Length: 432
Image (cartoon, rainbow, N blue to C red; front, side, top):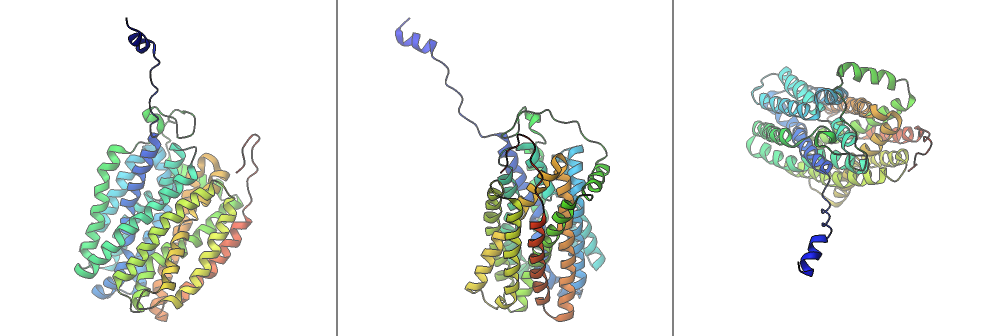
């Protein structure tokens, strides 16, 4: 045997190259899933004026349908989180995407406002609610121990990414081909994601013999029965704590000042001032661009700084920007409006990572369900403003009053954030 052969025989095998942890692939699938479910959220602001024109429905009626959607989006979330514990994330996600597609398709044939409330409100609300931030919380809690703040920010940004993709497209379709093809487009977007979810999404790291990213291996827990009972039980326990009411109150104001206000009424408000629908929708899509940046950055900051102070800063700056918005509306896009869009995008859902971190800190293994109820308050706030904004436009012939009211509410949310007290760290626990 030659010396070279002997050396090869006794050589230590080269170690395997580090591979990307499966958790990151699951997060990528969840990101695409949320985009598919969120596609419908691009529509309401674009269709308020066309539906008012085609059917003669008041903006208050249309706003009420949007408010049902937003309320159910929130109220479904805690039950969806519990259902994921019972049946798995994959089954719940597929069912949710199918409901969104059904609601969007059926709306093409509607002839009465009650049908709008049924299809947009009930079906789409239940579907998008099951794909809401509680889904992100479940993915993050199961698959990640390290980098939870960052992953929360990335998954939260998925909704904004859907807005970035679908808003300009749907605005162009509405302006050139009518609102029905736009509704079909978002239905197809939800259906396309279904096989992707079914084949690639996994419920738990133990399903593939892995530990969560940055943690120790844990066996997959047995399915929990009584999903609805558990969601309600967790709520009853949470409402006995002051932290829950502060988190729910601040997040309700967050929903009122984002989904209920800007997402629903920015485009029709800009159109009232003479701006083309496609231009206004493009500005709203730009919010989505900076939303991705701001949310991921907020997740990074949440891993390093006090979540309460981050929330106070986010809400205070958002309130100031809303007070200036009415004077920025104009027929054309100008630099001050672009500055508002960039700033508001950075702040849009930057509140999610610190809010989820505070839920996790206070409520431990029940944090995903508690966050689902906190998200419900977010959407109830959004629903109230979605309805009130339409009524305000019918009564005052302007949206200005809701801009000012939302700005004042954000100042209240900033103060509420500072009132939340940190939970004392356990012995041996490392503080941020």
